[in-house]
Image (cartoon, rainbow, N blue to C red; front, side, top):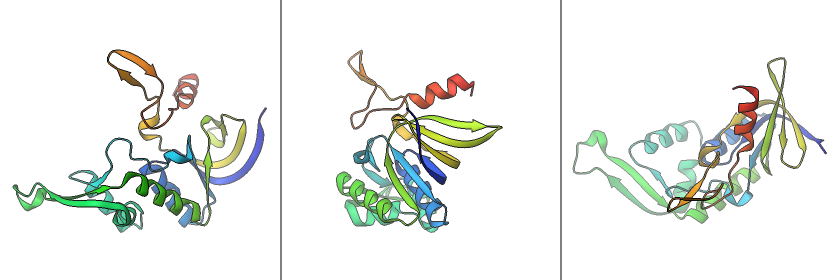
Length: 193
């Protein structure tokens, strides 16, 4: 049974690096925002490699930082070591990389989201994005909660249709750290997108 759970300007689906930054940016611009994570314990989880920086991500983090983002601030609070990479090469490729205490990074980012004005953090899997006349109208969770929204930002990261193989056997539709969403994939296939 579905029910109307609220009305917002922006819904962010996924609470990894991109989702957290998107939700914080929207909320700080004064938009009534909510962010969804399949598990509240998986917010800013860093499942692949618990570091910020390096040759590619370091450049992006600096750009986000210059726009008021949180990744750089959060790693400053939670790093356990920092290292300059590529020092045997020219200065154009030197790059800082900070290794995070994964649990502290996650807890600190979750706390940042929870205390941000205009932002609500929700646990739930989005199973449908409702569109009428080419305009987004709402998102629906796996428990039937419908949130009327004007904009949806999909930032599903590594948890979209994730699978784990142990040897050659598929062990389930999840990753090491969290269950994975397949509902959005089914929704897009159904709608022909």
